[in-house]
Image (cartoon, rainbow, N blue to C red; front, side, top):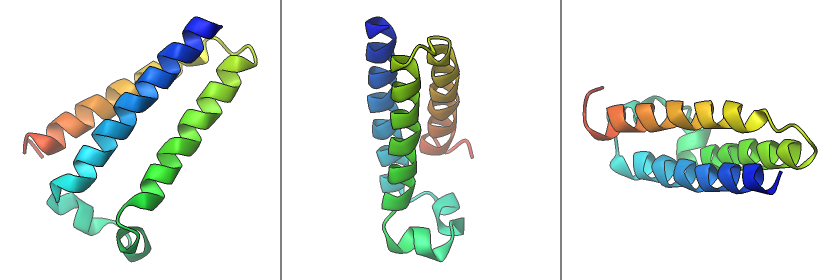
Length: 90
């Protein structure tokens, strides 16, 4: 269980770093976010990212070890989407 928590936590750090990089990139897709999200400088999306991480950590800590794989898949999708946005492929 401790190993799963460590993995989810480290993946969460990666997700936050990628999320922040995308927000700072000024990509044109960010302009399509709703106004209330943009007015907070994207902090609302970082709060949502934190809540996903918190839920994953709590579930893994309470015996849902398989959720580590689900969160790893979620993180993989985040890596691919950030790579697409930050390299200008989208």
